[in-house]
Amino acid sequence: YFFLFPNPVCLCASQKLCQRRDISSWLARWIFKNPAKPVVALKTPIKVELVAGKTYRWCVCGRSKKQPFCDGSHLFQRTGLFPLKFKARETRVVALCTCKATQKPPYCDGTHRSEQVQKTEVGSPL
Ligand code: FES
Image (cartoon, rainbow, N blue to C red; front, top):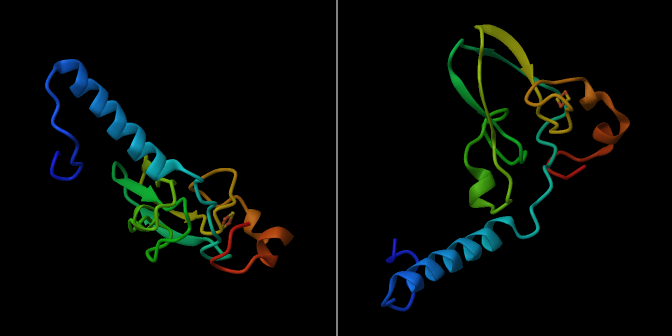
């Protein structure tokens, strides 16, 4: 912990508390400053078979190379965005959104057919 976030040595409990607060605010600033907008990954949904009880992480940022699921790109590219974690209730084939404009994430709701999405270049924000 201290190896990753070197700070001056603290001498009392209250200073330790202050240090922790400093580190968290620094992390929050680093991660959340100007959160990026999701980008259009594709303009059509991807059909996948979800398995009942299994947890999935749907890509919110649109930068994942493993669409429609997260590959950690949101973190490496410091987007300030996080994947949507969800558990499948039943085993079935569903269409998951890749344009990142759906109003029913992670599922496609047809928004990809809108003029706004169709006019946007893949890899660009809406
Ligand atoms: S792919 Fe996003 S709404 Fe259909």
